[in-house]
Structure formats: structure tokens, C-alpha cells
Image (cartoon, helix red, strand yellow):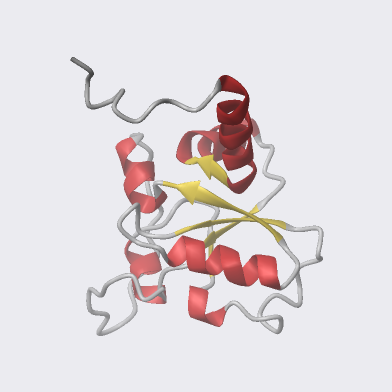
Length: 144
């Protein structure tokens, strides 16, 4: 009897090596971002692509807020093409970071997704920064 895991055979090791190595060129994780921040080696721009109200409620320290729908060449004019953007959204249930990564790549920027987003950050036990709330701000969803 074969387990459910082995019903579909694993890829040969050379193909697995290529696949998993390639994934790391597209993504980073919360621990690597946090570790880089703690070491003072932040050679990337961390972007929270959620809406401003979600950003105010809590975001990864050091992140800037550019909602995904606002990622345009005009909004990014201050960033040289050599900028590495690391984008994140609410978490694995949201594809806003993927959409933002597509836009950034189409504009010629290097980009990685911080997998896990805010959910992953909190799961790792890291603290969020909270911005002062605006008057009459209401809780909202991702807006990315």
C-alpha cells in the first residue's frame, strides 16, 4: 500500500533543486526580513501593498505603504531601477502581493514577495508598528 504522499512520485533531485532554488529568487520570508532589519542590513524597500487603513492598524516595521492599485511609474519615480522591492499583503489568503509583484516587474524593478505577509509576521512572534489612526477610520479589508 502506498501513502497519499507517494501516490504522485517526487521529482528527481536535479529538478527539485532547480525548482526550489528558483522559488528563492521570487520570495523571502518574514524571518529573513526581520533578521536583516535586526542586523541593520536593509538593502531592499519593504512595501505593504494593502490600503492605508489596514496599514494604519498594523504593518511590518520599516515598511512603506503603496497600495497595489497605486503602483505606477509615477508613484515610483523616486526609486532607481536598481531598487529591490519586497512586497507583502495581509497573508497567504490574499494575492495582493503577487499582483503588486507583477506590476513592479512589468515596470522593470526587481521584486520579491515576503511570503506569509502580516499573518506570517505575527505567526513568527514579531511585533507590528501601528500608525496613529485617522479620524473616522473604519476597519476594512485588504484593498490591494
